[in-house]
Length: 105
Figure 1 (cartoon, rainbow, N blue to C red):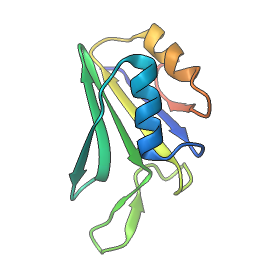
Figure 2 (cartoon, rainbow, N blue to C red):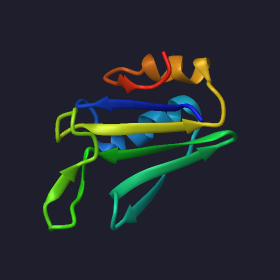
Figure 3 (cartoon, one colour):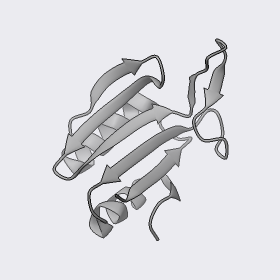
Figure 4 (cartoon, rainbow, N blue to C red):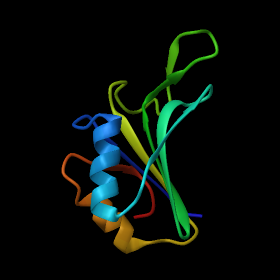
């Protein structure tokens, strides 16, 4: 199951959900969990996308980083698909301010 991770310091979570949703024709639902905190989720045939801040609630009451290699103020776009989707990856790579930080080459 290919996973793609993108990040940005240029967009807030709500703004990124709106941008990606408009460009890809997806509807992101706002969610909240004790593990991830506030995030946005969109599902589509063969996959899903989650947009969340890099900071997540820690067990000790302090925020932790979801991805330690990225700045705390970044927003993450995490995509999971059933099969590699080069066209989807290319569309995400082309979004202004979004940088691929992990995934199939």
